[in-house]
Length: 182
Image (tube, rainbow, N blue to C red; front, side):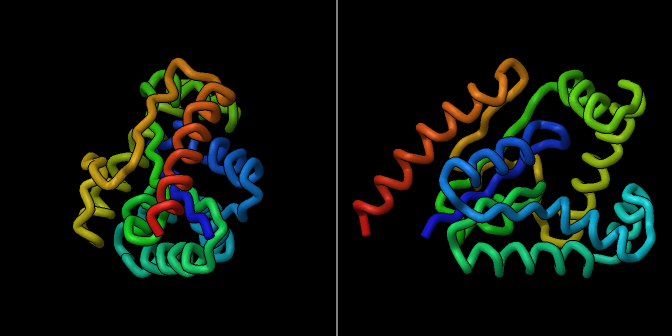
């Protein structure tokens, strides 16, 4: 049974990398962001407004994180989300954190969401500050403290294949060593 948690900054490549790792290793893929967006849609609340609501109602985050933990306990999964590494720190075999420069992340988000770079910077900045406050308030987690992660990778100058090459090499070694120690 393998559990991989992928966390990182908005537009750092979390979703793309997590999906490709799940595919490569034949694991299930679970996205906390998709769960968050689905809850927002079900409630008929725009995404950024739902972020604001989540700041007031910690049950939203707790519900999503509880669902992620249950998925992790089933095993054979890659779970992607801003808090995945922290929430799954005692369950995940490998905890990955992806980061990139604000400029590169804004370009990625602007292209993906068909928005201006300026709007992308505003959205990223808002989401990061909103997430930081929420997670500190709800869980006492400082998202700037990356000490729970096994590997922190800057994707600024790497393409998807290069990121995957680095992570697969690392994951293979960790899984092999963990299995030989049990």
